[in-house]
Image 1 (cartoon, rainbow, N blue to C red):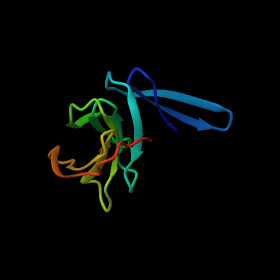
Image 2 (image 1 turned 180 degrees about the vertical axis):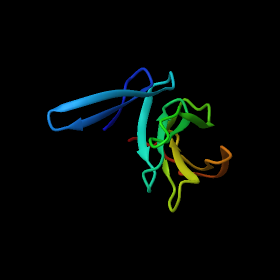
Image 3 (image 1 turned 90 degrees about the horizontal axis):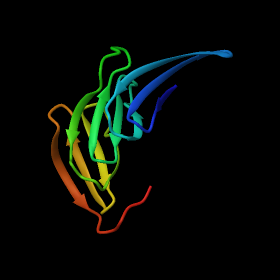
Image 4 (image 1 turned 120 degrees about the vertical axis):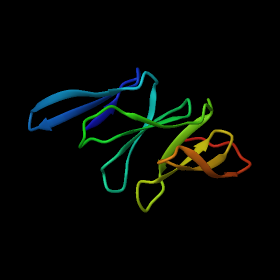
Length: 119
């Protein structure tokens, strides 16, 4: 079970029966608004409402790597764009849908829906 604390800490709970073990995986120092696994479960996107997206690879147990920083305080959510783990799609409160290259952290395309979005 992966869990994010309000302070921006990614925590892993290994649960077996009535026993559990807790491990702190990463500290990104920004409140995490979403955790999304890639379709093949090799990567975990850590999304902040400040417009920053990090990648964490559970099998490698390393630090979270910053993939992109939109510097947008109206950032709502992001998810992998399948197939694969190379692209993600994000949405802002203002209704802008964006497609990003995760390998380069660049904006590839955007579409304005013309409406305010809520989750």
